[in-house]
Length: 128
Image (cartoon, rainbow, N blue to C red):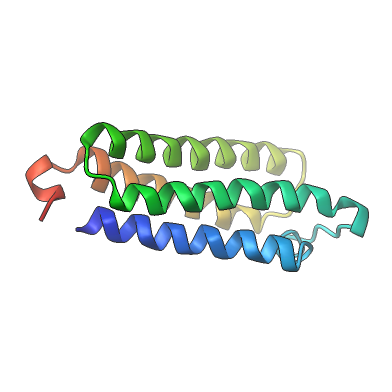
């Protein structure tokens, strides 16, 4: 039950992030002091495409029943947030605004939640 709820919440949040990246491309980068010119919006649009795909994956994962299916969904979400978090740390090492650490911490929390509820929690407890 908790895993399904987590997947649905994740789907809604990633869908919302994608929509914001399309409708107001400079809004999310602007939170850490990155100003984009309209010619740079393509980067936000490409990221929005990834957000939409992850939102779909999360929504699908909330409905799939098989253990293999769930593990593939959870593994993909963990890889997405893990690789993005590592790349954000690389950007921080290059001098990007320290407020980005909040996003890195959020990604670590997402990874921990999916790892616990989807992979580490005993199978019987996952299906309650």
